[in-house]
Amino acid sequence: MKYMVYIFLVNGDDQNLNTKEGAKMGQIEVGKTYVVSPFLKKSLTAHESFKDADGREVIVTKLYRNGEFIITIHTEEEADALDENITERADPDSLEQWHTDDFSDWTLTGAYDGQGIHFEYDGTKYDGSKGVDYYEFLHDRGFKDAGEEWMCLGGLEVYKDCEVDEDVVIEYGERLTQSGLSYV
Image (cartoon, rainbow, N blue to C red; front, top):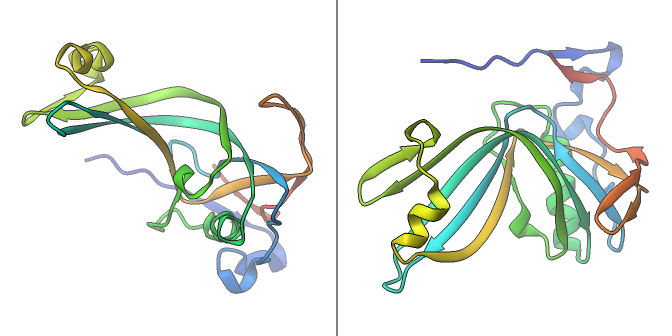
């Protein structure tokens, strides 16, 4: 069994930043655009859904080292969903997940360094080690694309007031995540 260990370095008076009481709540504003990426490495997953004519569904899960999203906030609910994950980001044991499905206007600018792939079909588990092209495998069996969702576990790094041009980040603005916390 493999274990992943995260070490958090805390500077001076910032020792309570990994709790909601120590974090700044309400930083996210409706109508603004933010650049978001996972706080912890290897915590970003893509979940692609495929369905066949009989309604059976297969979900392919891919793990990435990191990635980046551009999100425009349109409602208070979306603002709260993003704000909550800024404050939870310092807890690698948290089971809180950030989902792109919580937002109506998001774009993936990139995900890199795929770490693994997994899906199950008719009781058989497949992963990247079996050399199966999942897209071709599922399409050959009558499955069609039915959507994609991205998730991140362990919190987010969030930047506001970024210069963005057609889904490309030109310049980063102010970092909203708390200073003084990092991982090695």
